[in-house]
Image 1 (cartoon, one colour):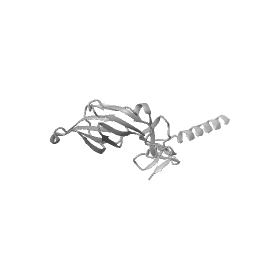
Image 2 (cartoon, rainbow, N blue to C red):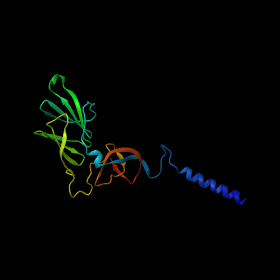
Image 3 (cartoon, rainbow, N blue to C red):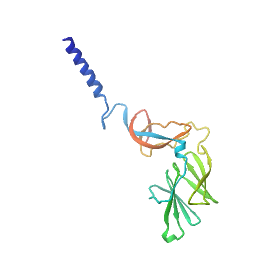
Length: 187
């Protein structure tokens, strides 16, 4: 009888542990569906990639005209280069990948753009092979800021894991995940 009761106790204990395992779509006390930050190391997001093939515009931003070229910002991704030699047949000819780019400006032969928290200067004298000639690190972070990335939050409302500030990494995207209700919240 003692062995039978021990077996029953063991089976109940196993069922208890098995029953607490989260199943997809199941509510877990203190957890909700929200957003988890994905970090990238500085070396992976600080390079300018040049693609001489056009790509469709997904989230259009600012437009600048420079000579016979038009530069259009792709918010968060980079800059489209459009050939405007003949305005009636203007077409995209290249895409410059500059992750985290939200703003840019042109003065003289230089394009000034943000690359997440850094300011980069790109030489426009050779449009087919642009080069970053200067990078000013952390130029978009105030020295006295407690959280140097206050703008880093998912676009959607709801709970999200509060981003952590690392000196050599940054949040590059957000993924759906189970997060604690003690996390950050965006209305």
